[in-house]
Length: 225
Length: 225
Image 1 (spheres, helix red, strand yellow):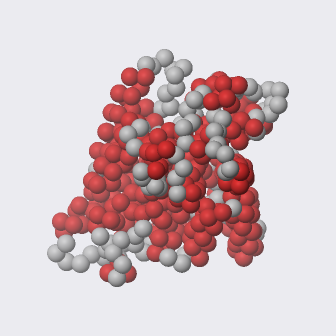
Image 2 (cartoon, rainbow over the protein chains, first blue to last red; image 1 turned 90 degrees about the vertical axis):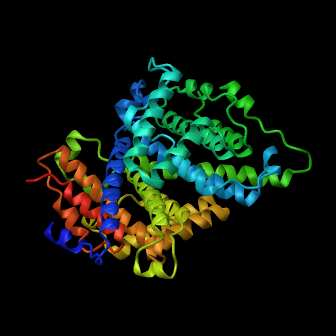
Image 3 (cartoon, each protein chain N blue to C red; image 1 turned 60 degrees about the horizontal axis):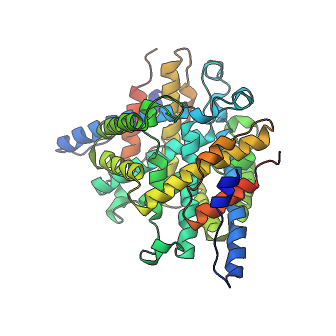
């Protein structure tokens, strides 16, 4: 402990008190923000919790688990789309998606859940109320982190929520694809589990060529019953 | 099921058989890759498992949980560093870190563990053997995903492993910071747990100003004993 503290001492030049103060405050805010978001490691994805076969045998995935894989999916999607140079109708105007935006948006798309939890359509909370709670939570997260970083993350989150860019629409597809891939994995591991409701809820959701191809492949992997 | 399958049908133009074949193969490879990486949701971070207070009361975090938060840390670090315009010695030559590289490197830095598991210094495997196993696992992941995406991810992973760029050196600091933040959170939740060994193992690891400030703040949050 003592060593760790000692070696991490910061050596500041003279006459830089104001910057030091600002940086100290930024550091405190950053660790506060990261601690709140860390709660997603323990926030279970509500959808699976009503299936006993899953809760009894498996460790129900966390929102952080889901967020990790959707960010990885976004990265792969972005890299592949860059190579193909776009193949959707709207790609004719604007060739490639912004990979950094795709990945970081996927990473933060669920962070409001660190405050309000994972609210699903079965929780008895209306879509409007859920949205209101999440917008407030995101506002709080932005204020906690502060600065340009807080604003950037809130902007990304709102863009996702409102589906107001091509990247946001792709991440919305990936959100469903990650869920369906997890569903097919649970079904293959626990043969008695039938997660058809999750597939049905995504009916007609896929507009991008990759999205359509990926969902077909995931469906192909469901166990035969 | 039937609906979901039907609406996800892909309508192809004529005479595009070769592209279709290539895309089908790419899709299969992508879902294979994402399924392997999905194992990180269930791979426990070995370091915590010997502490009964943690394993009994908490859900030990997964490698995916850790990877989610380190990627988020990398994003915040990158955004803040962009704003400050760099403040390290070497920043004088090269102003800002590549945020996309920081985030995506953090995201993939542990994916070889989806095949070999989370090997720690206490596992009885030498550092050289661990590295060999992980390099082979990463090679397998690259081949599974294939294409430019597979190569890009392997390159990022190797850059991280070899610490061969400024971004890699930052992500190595973040890897330790994320662990220490989790340690302080466990210690605050389970007052009997003393995780000093984790802090000691990071002694002298922090070279960036942000890294030094963040670790000081994390140490400040350890419970008083």
